Amino acid sequence: MYIVIDGEIELTVPRDGETVSLQTARRGDTLGEGAIFHGRRIADATAVSDSRLLLLSEEDLGRLRDQYPRIATRVYHNLSRILAVQLGKATSMVAFPPETQEPEESGAATREP
Image 1: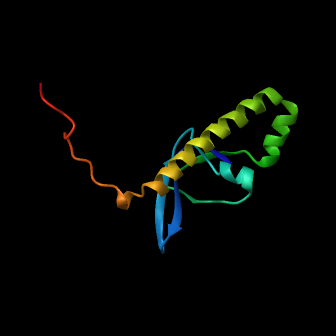
Image 2: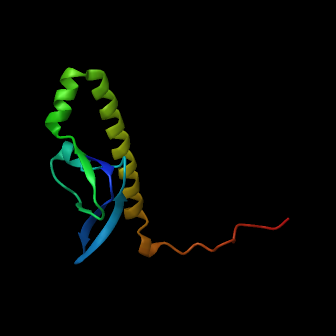
């Protein structure tokens, strides 16, 4: 798992012979956290600017858990929140792919008094 210290990292996946951008990770964002739990990468990561990342391996998290259990509890709690948000976004993308969404009409819900 990585934490972006500086810079921008584009996360992409291949789909139908094309590269689809998932998001651009910036300062404070995490990437690769899913691999800690299931051991495989899901997306490709490419630095789009000069970047510095902090690597936290599964072993690092294990040592943190053993030596500083209270801090580790907070880290794992935050990881579960990050993964829950990402699962929600992925579910929305599958349930409502961009190509099936109808364009929003601007001002349609606004009424003048």
